[in-house]
Image (cartoon, rainbow, N blue to C red; front, side, top):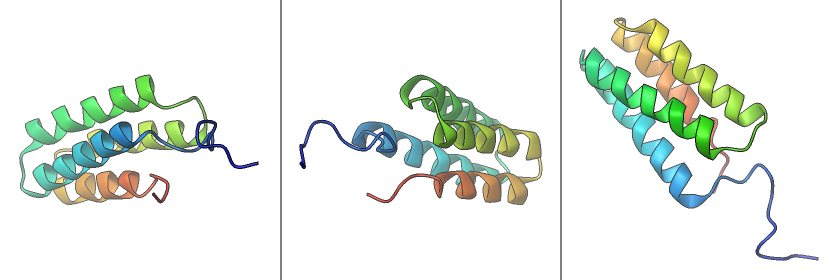
Length: 94
């Protein structure tokens, strides 16, 4: 029975998905450009959004871990950007 309000527990609300995707893209761009402060701020915010807006589970853990790994990789901008991009790839397909 296909109802429109239940949904898949892995589904991320559109606004949360958009926010995380935007934050992770901004973090990757900033890290690649050598702007560690902006990358750090975007990653911190993405981790907070994941913690507060995603249901407990593997996806939330992977996104939080990816943000932490990208933060740990700074000031290596290329590595931090790669972690941010890989973390964004953890979003389910729309």
